Length: 163
Image (cartoon, rainbow, N blue to C red; front, side):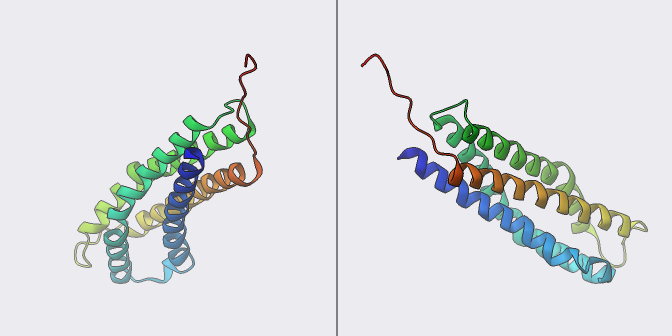
């Protein structure tokens, strides 16, 4: 029963994290080149302010719940277990993209105004967009692996044959 509860929590947190990544990327990717510098700065700062705090909670809890799912999973040499591990690797990759690429760019954008906009702001915007897309892809992959494990991989408890 504990495994099912932890799986549910992990799936819910993966859904929330992936939804935040997907929503941000999808809402901006189709028209980001059409935004003026002032619009991009405003939108960027607004999204950063809205998403930064919740993701500081959601993503670590998500990773922890996937680790707990793997730890509690009864059959370690099974397709289900390997899907959990794939999900974990992909969501950790999403975290690394966020912390080591996206957050430094976000920190720069937070300092921008129309008056002090760097000359290469469009290049940085392109990098920002590319890594948002990559992070969205890795989080969708993580979510998909976890759903596959949950829906398609049935596990049975290993019985003690000495009894």
